[in-house]
Length: 294
Image (cartoon, rainbow, N blue to C red; front, side, top):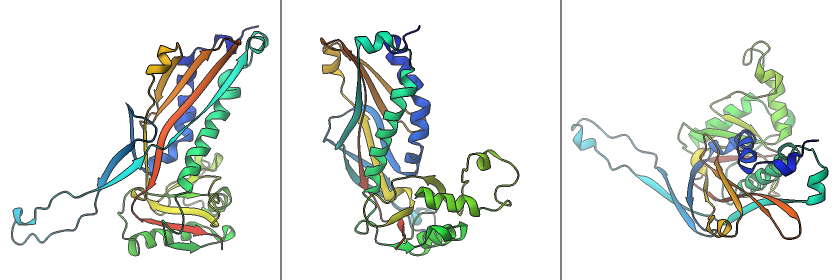
């Protein structure tokens, strides 16, 4: 019987994980991100920049008189989160097993890594950081509520029009799916089959099960991308490679976030697999509205 664990090639495992990583971390595209494979150490900082909302100038005096400096807002994000997972398999386990390592062990562990990342993001969404809130029950959450949240971002928060998204917990997401009418999702579509929500009221919509993790009855968060910042960098491999540890780094397509995989064998007959991520998150501009249940 083929031994999948013993014969698993680290490069293949890393590459096969890309599809899952891309899906898992897709909501990060809603944030302002600064990702690079450049190596930095845990605890170091990244200065990220995004455009400050400009003001139109009177053109009556000519083009040059209306010239303005391009204003950028700078924000510091500390790379204070270096998390991952490690699995070990003994010689006996590897000799008897024909399981698929990637499906049985790697994918659930990547999910745990994703939960950690999004948990850190949700911990930023507090009343202290984002003071505007809207109380809406899950039973009544629908497209009209998203339209109202969008109006608040525009009228009250003065947020830029582009890059708006909403994160919500499964109960609110399910309510929204049920209330979308056939005119918005006509026919039998992939969206209906998979209970996916299309872009609604200028928002990209994402489901998360971590919305109430900060103890403030948070159920959803409507925001413009400059509200939440995330930076990620490559992990140094020099010492690992000197120790004979096999290392592979993959970059999530469309995001640029580097994820590192390692494999090593110890003198007690255990083969270890490891996956890790170096990142940090921070609050940006207050362009957000918290949806609370009470």
